[in-house]
Image 1 (cartoon, rainbow, N blue to C red):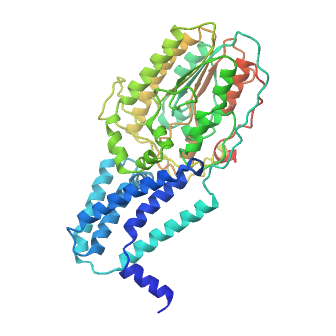
Image 2: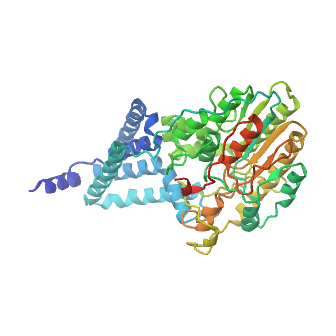
Image 3: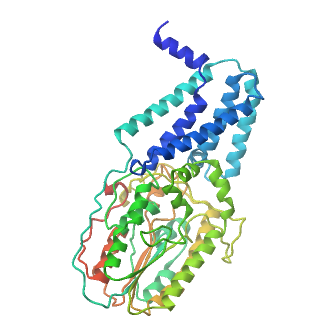
Length: 500
């Protein structure tokens, strides 16, 4: 018998490796995604030990129901895959098959499969499933080992050195308020996809003296990428990862805060992120989870959604508290020390649960499709090159617009106060609404992700360096020039794969 035949026979009839291989693959794959610059061997090693212990205990439990150890471990592997890769399973089905999918649907589906397997396997004698599962996960692990050895972690090294122009000696620096409206779509998107006319809001901003960017677009379709890029005044290395730890480190050590510190500004962080020396009490657990390997693993599992299920409605409270914090800073203005304030509002980011009276209704819970990667932004003359139909679920549309209207009310209340002071105000969203279905293959859905909102207020009303297609990375460069007297030139405005 040849070596290959002996190996095949062993993997089929002797070795039941797949439950352990599932654990190894889960740890290895997420170690790569977490980023090697943050790698500490004891973090994945500790997680591996814990999961192996849990797997052993489950194996002992299942062996009570099955005399055949092969069958009990088929069930064990299914349970492990369902728990550890739940997020991937859920969003794969949601993105490609059922846009209105809910967690209860997937949980019911997985439970039915488990029950079916439980009874079906009692009559199965073939060892081919064992061979298939062993080989499948060995292949997956081999691919990840090669990727790890080649260093394909999508991050790369970045130069952290930073130099800027000589400081402006003027003591009359304006306060700077960066109000980030997460997921707030621009007027063109609201009109085209939601049939909602938002000109009343933008006209009100113009009356207050704002410069409204009519053709605004974001550089990236995700929050962490946009914020990391604009706060560091440059484009990021292209990546296929949604929320890599490396981007969070750029935000933590960002250049904009460092600059304002150098010019004597007080820093007020009311954002979703921590800054060095300026932690935010409004930081999102989602981003904190990306700085801890154990929590990063947890965010991939079914347990994460169960833990966070009780947070419906907390987002509204959080946003209102942030607005109270900004209003407190405005009311208690210290004229001798200029302020840089970054407030990050999630009122127009899913999930949406405000009714038309702007009250939390827990029967309403609309989410946007899960999105992955940086996708290409194509030119306007290719609008007929769609790969399927784009639509927004009518319920999601109504819920989203409820949040837009509520945000408009709160934004105008705040801006009417800020424009009476020596303050620069940036109302900026990081990306579009991202609410179109069929998001992976459809041109319209891809384009809409970049249709962000932007309006800027300068106390002197001179907007000669702004223009109608400026992107976030250049907005912040121009605001620095205006507030500090720096001499940053504009980068080429790019979006999506254009930034390569």
